[in-house]
Each structure stands twice: as C-alpha cells, then as structure tokens.
Length: 303
Ligand code: FE
Ligand code: FE
Ligand code: ZN
Image 1: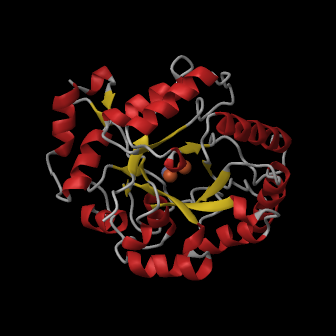
Image 2: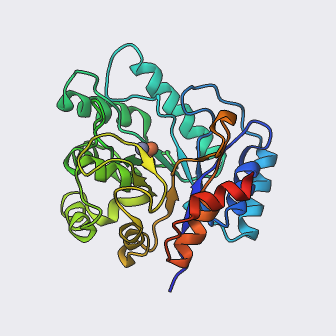
C-alpha cells in the first residue's frame, strides 16, 4: 500500500519563509503541509527569498515530502464573487499571489470561490468565472483548487453543481481543480457518514479526476447547518471512524490530505495559549484508533 499523504496547516513567516513551514511540518511527522504566504486576513506580503526556497526544497527531498503535494491557501479576504469596489483589487492580488506561489516552487493553491454578498448565486458564479479567466492564462503554472464551502452567509460553492458551473466556465479548465473539505461538505448537507454515496455524487457532478486536495476536519455542527466551524478529529459530529474512511479511501489514496483542525486551548484559559493538535492527530490517524484522551495529552505535551 502506498504511504498516506497527510499534513496540516502550518505557518509561514517573513524570516524563515518556506524553511520554517517545512520544519513545522516535519515536527508533526507530516509528509505534506499547507500554508498562507502571509496573514490570511490581509494582503501584506514579504518578498520571497530564493535562497530559503532552495533550502526548503532540499529539506523536503530529504524528508520525503513531495512538493507537488504541498498546498498554498489563498488569503480568504480575496472575494471574486462580488464585483463591487474590491473586485479589481482581488483580481490583481490573486495574480500576484500566483506569481509568489510559482516562485516558491509550489504547484497547488486552494481558493474559496467567494461570497456574492446579496447579488445572488448566479451573479456570484458569473463574477467568479470572469475573475478566474482574467487571472489564469496559458502560462499559469499553479493549479487553482476551488474549495467546497459550508454555505455560511452568501458563500458560493456550497453545492457540487455550483463548483461544476465555475469549472465549466473556465478558459483553461485543466488549470482548475477542486478541494473537498469534510467539515464544509457536512455543514453544506453532504453526509460524510454516508461518504461513498457523497463521493459518488461528487463523481457524477464534478468528476473524481478533478479532485486535487482534501481538507480533513471534524465539524462542531450538524449536517446542513451552514456554519463552518472545524473541530478536532473524532471530537465533532462527523466522528473518527467516518473521517478514517475518507482518509484511507482507496480512490483518494493519491490525494494530499490536510488537517485544519483548531488549536487546543490551554487548561488555564486566562493564559490565552493554544497548542497545535497536528502531531497528535496525525499519529492517531496512523494508528487508526481513537484516543479519547487526545486533547489532554496535547495540553500535557506542550505545557
Ligand atoms: Fe479554506
Ligand atoms: Fe478547508
Ligand atoms: Zn472552514
């Protein structure tokens, strides 16, 4: 059996850049990872240091991390679905972000389709299609992975049909793929308990060959709640066994799986400290056995 491709969301800072991200991934025993190239809520970005990038790629090779499995997440403030006053800026910023991802030698970028903010889904989807066709051209090296959304507020991409509509509008369809988030699909109303049926639906509507990335999260909310609040693996409404079924699904073996589960808060909440759960969640996933004491073990490890 091929090795599980699993990693987590890691940080990226100005000083260490990709080297820091790789080190963090290695500390979790991950063989892939995902990062924002700067703060997700703003568009301030440092220049990419080519020396650090080279060093990071050498480290990845040494540690069995295939750079094609590594994911950048586009800042979530980019909203391509509403063509109001920030639309042109969002398009320009996404173009720049793609260049940065190319400079970093990363080949996949996850993007939230966007929120229409009152324009209606149909207009929202049109705006997304127009914007992506402005951004992507024949020279684009990065594959954009549209993320399936929970349907919070006016988010587009809450159904497989909406994602398919965007894909169908692409001038360069081979450069646009899909990222499936287990928390988001649950909250959007697609069962992860009955995952084979959901995957069958995905295959019928979008096509399994378009799936390029998986976000593995449990959910704090129930099926169809349209909330989007991630929970630690096995501690939410989806449950450990159902997530394991996704993670070890043979049809999904070649697809990188990224954890975006919440940091665990310190017992003493007045300290406001929180610890990354990823080393422990990855270990638990590899052991395929739920640990009901995981949260406590994380607190003990980091304190
Ligand atoms: Fe996301
Ligand atoms: Fe996600
Ligand atoms: Zn989410």
